[in-house]
Image 1 (cartoon, rainbow, N blue to C red):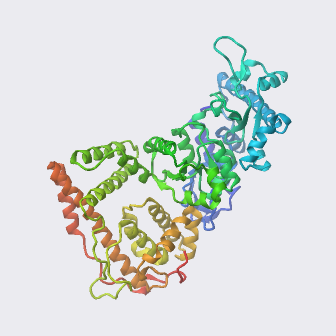
Image 2 (cartoon, rainbow, N blue to C red):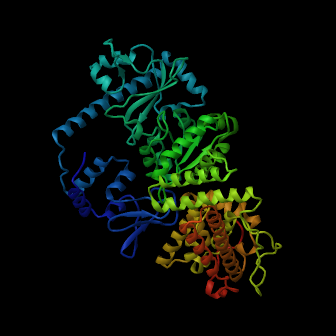
Length: 621
């Protein structure tokens, strides 16, 4: 029910936020505020800050007030959290009107009926009549512990559910409203919706059973069946397995979205207990919003066939308008012909982990989808693709994200145009030291790395030499990263840097890396500091001289800026050649002026005394 804003503000003013959080988390005084290790993800260094009216975790992005903290930490509904805090504050929660009270009482009654049906299905699975259903689950690799944890059951054929619950005094009208019976339009007797099916109870985030899904054991259609919409069950806002997955999601900072019930259960049985699924349809906007309350970048895992590709595209289309800072998706496609259960059984959990780690960011799937709709062999077809890019970007409501997407998609567009003309996208300039400076790499001068590698080297340098952030943090934050995963590392690193600066703490390499790993960035760090290490100049290594490391960073930053401007400039020249409008000319002149203003990086950085010591030596991440 809706509560007056005045009551909610009074409630939050009477119960100090630090008191609410301090009951569950050990708080450390930090000036006028507090900090702690985040209760919503596994970390060793505090990044969870508590202010007067809100909390915010700079590691995982958790944010909210006293009510949302009680909901998240205690697994409570909104009203349950309000009632608990109101009792503590000595406030009386405003009473609902008679109609609301009647609805709530009706829902409670229906909940008891659905729970009774769930217990009936569980019991029947273990009786002789459920032998075939139990054997099916065992053949799918599920042990009894997993079957019990998900409360799987069996619905016998005929009218067994109706007969059982009528003996318990439940009439047909209630069973229809609870989603257990269907009523034919021609006036015939109601019938059990679930008959001769393996039953998958669907629970809300508090663990209450609200409906069921069923898989047929024979050849009947449909193969999978969901319960209908009821006062308890709203398919578009519910995610299967979320209740079972919440603790694992909080611990790992990751949520995996599979396609169906058995995918979720198979993943959980293999150790991926952070998996959920929509209910027989493509992800809805409401389900995507729910996912973002648990993780900044949920991983959507689809079968590698044509149907999986279509499902990924539908999810992308629904997610695009909702994207925002810290709200994105990643897309993982399984090998063709395999679902998660098949992949795990055939190749083991490690293969599944590799698929998840290789998930592509939203921008990559967006470009792939756009590119598949257009050829680029004529000016008209290229113009059609540009128009499609603009239309796609306009759907993103957050203008800052929309601007980033527009730039990233146009970069990919012009990279293909240049490639078709036999040009390169990375300018092929020699990577050399400033005049008179010592060499920064033992490797011979060669072509300038592609933008992603440049960004990785810039990040690796400051990760291995965190003291350089005193000289580079502002410019690092200004870079328009082409790789969203690297951008996430950059954002988290600068957040840690700001926190250490405020608290007067040293910039310790090991401490910072451990903090970033606890924020779920371990895989990206391994790529940046280990997988790409053979491509790094020697100035990046942790044992490199501080002056040389800074000099190398300055030179590469300048090269990256020039490459970005040159890329935009070529695009502007192409546009002006095709359009010759005032807007196109203004863009071209502005970029030429920006290129002319670009200064040469300094010949030598500050002394190592000014820079300070770096972290432990070695190349391990």
